[in-house]
Amino acid sequence: MDNVSFRYLKFYTYVLLFTVLAFFILYQGRILFIPLSFAILISFILYPICKMLEKYTGRVVSIAVGLLLLGVFGFILFQILANSISLVQEKFVVSKDKIVALGDVIIQYLDNLFVITNEQRQALVQQLYDQVLQKSFPSFPALFLPPPAPLLFF
Image 1: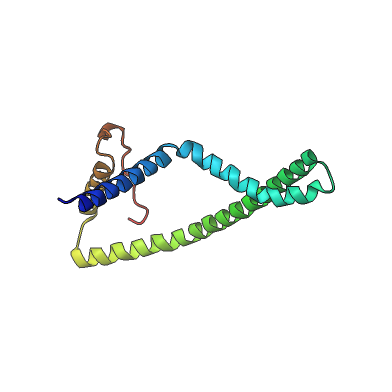
Image 2 (image 1 turned 30 degrees about the vertical axis):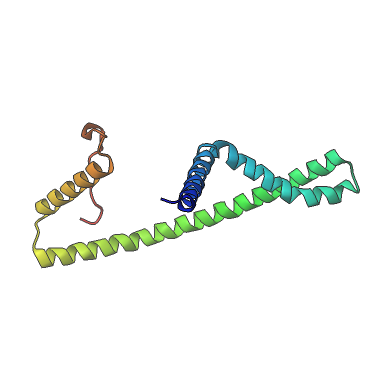
């Protein structure tokens, strides 16, 4: 290996090392960096408002008014998001009946196609439930798992 290719290999090794180290530091420091970044973002948002208000009032009053405006804006934004989430939840409740009816139609179709008795269906559902829980929580003991809820469309 000649000297030039060794330098390139050394350079790319350092680049890779520092990239991995930077991501590791950012990941481990997320507890500090996330609130710090929000604080910097809020300060950039409030700076022009406070600078404009500082001409008419003192510095402390302009900062207090800026924070008050930010709080009011945050409260309004929270109310809008809460209202939209409640609308989505109401639509989900309405569509739940449609989903249950669709499940009932699918079960009837499969019953006609495969001729499965109710006991066989319950055994299949129980087996599927056990497999899903076993794959989802492999280290969780089966003693603490709740029994499967009866399906609404049987």
